[in-house]
Length: 465
Image 1 (cartoon, rainbow, N blue to C red):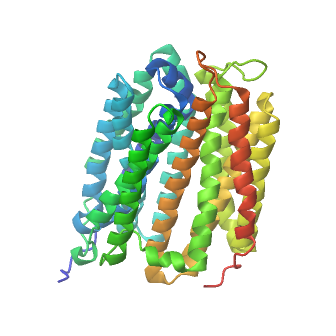
Image 2 (spheres, one colour; image 1 turned 90 degrees about the vertical axis):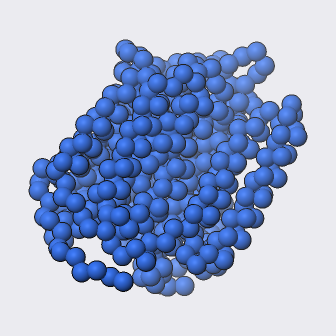
Image 3 (spheres, rainbow, N blue to C red; image 1 turned 45 degrees about the horizontal axis):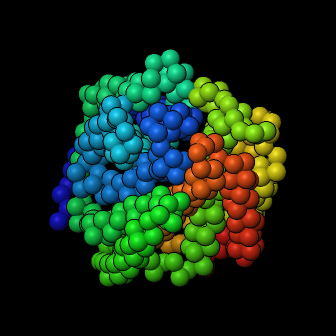
């Protein structure tokens, strides 16, 4: 039964700016791991395959929390859920700051992953409190400030970790998040809850998907030690198969599934998922391998760069990633998804294959990482836009959630595969991976990207399928 509610109170500019400052803080916290990952591996005494977990657990939590946050926001009100999600993020930042070892740091990253669900939730709140024209400006402001925060984190993490400690690079943005969350809570008007009958939550599906993703990470983490622990690896593979089977069965029978697997039968959906998986696998491989290559000082390769220097070298890629998203949307509308995705796949394959051959100069790394970021932004934006316009309006949320999960799976497999290759490619008694491990990683991702052209060329130009 629907209750008639009063129109929401108009949001003041101060509240919008408070949301923007909160976005800067969360963006900074999200990006501190990438440039300091080699440093974290040394200080925590962990292998590259274990360190790869730090690159992906936040994204996995975000993939699970994002659809849940929207439904909870509809049921209880956007502001209420947003503030509670940021409380979880703050707790995660503090846990990461105080973490003495890898398991505790992973817990902190899991809690921080709630920030990915909080950002789109803030857009929903803005739309409720502002007219259409003003809400677009506000959403653009908050989005831009989140990206700006990511660049702040990328540049500041290294200097803070080296001048103070790794603990402070998590603590400083977390303190900012706590302060701006309190400010948002004070300035933002409360929005009324929506219809609760449309906010059913597929708890069994979400829990089983969590089991799938966590077990998949453990399988990759154990892969380098398969020879010494074959029974453990075999047991994990059996558990993974059981989780996948159970999740598929639950989603096919659920009245309101988290992911509607029946939609995968549509060509526009499965082709988009395949291409998104490949692009995200290549991106994750680059995100993981490039900082490791910059940090290492091997026999005739590597750069021995400090965390601060790594942050500056990665910055051009972050700038390109910021521009690639809007460019992908414009390109999809102008030329169609097939042209944009084909270009993105060619760029990705070229960059990865080139890095497998040429990675001895800093400019090789800068250009390669920038091209990978460009390809990722173009492809993912074009895929989401294409999906939104190629399915019925009522199926948009379901279809885009499939893309979201596919992105997480591609990122998880790419990051963990990179970690496995470096761990297995490190000679006994040494802590420096062989150059061939980096070459193999870039080569595998590049070949997979090139093969995905077989799928890209069969895409339609935008008509419904």
